[in-house]
Length: 606
Image (cartoon, rainbow, N blue to C red; front, side, top):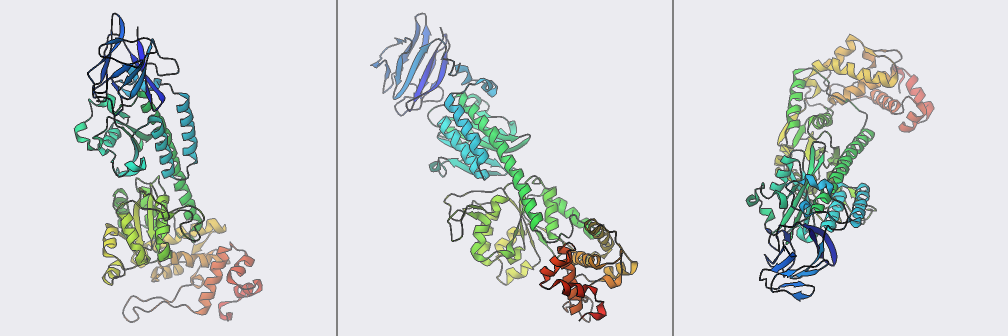
């Protein structure tokens, strides 16, 4: 009749191994055994269990530490009775006749299957089910992707008793990004196999070394040297490969239950990471929309040749993997270009996070970029994610990079090179999957020559450069921009607006030192004070023009007191959405004063 053995590890009964009559089962430490045991005193080929006409027997293969049956060391084959206790070196096995109890695994064939398809039939012990329940609860409550990954690896480490478990993330551009390895002592000693990850990526299925060794190129997997067995499971969300779980073992093989546990954890972890990436994207988009100043344009407007060339460069840069440097004057729409790159890139499903480098103090650069732990410094009352983790899986837009303090440029150089970073007050290094886009209105080459900007950081940023043309270089786009802006103002105000040919001609002639942002402000101001629906010359509040021809080149734009007052009132009224009392509060004057300013003609203005 058939039989089974139970391996006892660390005082606990492990999974059963089914024995079929007519077969011999080698026992030992070496990987070609049928029953691979982990133990310092187990020989490579320690013993054999076999069957004959008398029943099941065990034979010692002349091992150094011997084999004991019910406490007696054997020197020749011994017949095994039901519930016999076997000690092989320093590992205990329990022998049983018939099939194993129903709450245990049913058959040895699950361990030695040629395919992982049979793993669907594996049953779980109550303690494994409890651990999976705790994992699912813990991973959903994890605040950061790194925490969710750690919870998953800790669960696998405890359930499989593996020596090394790790997560290797697959970036959206197929970079292999090491994230977490447990236990901590193994992080520097062992590397996760990139070749095994590549096999999983190609096959889109789990790989179990014990059953797939005939199809794997083991000679090229230097990271697996010293391990008896390995499991690699893909993290898939639909067709998207997020990463892979690696589970390595020394001295013994995994069981079918180990593989199934890893697959369940990987499936749930993939869904959790994908959900967090989408939530991060929506949170960042919401934050960006709420904190952004009055929006100028939500899309690239213009049909000029300059704009066609800009769109072409944006499309090519979006598909490229390199860092992008966007240069251009204030108000030309550099953030809009970054938004378009994000929308067209493979990272469109990840967050677009904007970091204003000009608003950073030298003391807070590292904290803002890398985050900090509670109590790391005075005022750090809770853990805070830095911009790098907020942009994980997406794009970090470094606005006003030319304003970055010199002391912070070293931190940026390190993370731009893809190196791990450490939050302030933390002990462990982490890595984020981030693509960088930077923007500046400064002459960075001049700043490098003057020693105000690191040359190595500039060269790292300036891999792909996009220049956004100023409005004066594409005046033919102004009628289209005016039409677009007036339609948006109409939506907000509820009135229809039009502009006279004379006013439109004036707008096209103007030099626009503030570019598209200034054009929107002029139209917004005109619509705010307009009694009817037609914008004419007298409604245009323009700064005195900055000449670009000979004679007055280089003069600063000027604006008289009347124009400044009109601009301030217009901006306040628009921000207050037409509420005069609120606008007066914004200006710091009484409501009656604001009404008197609005009712006076230009000639009557003080």
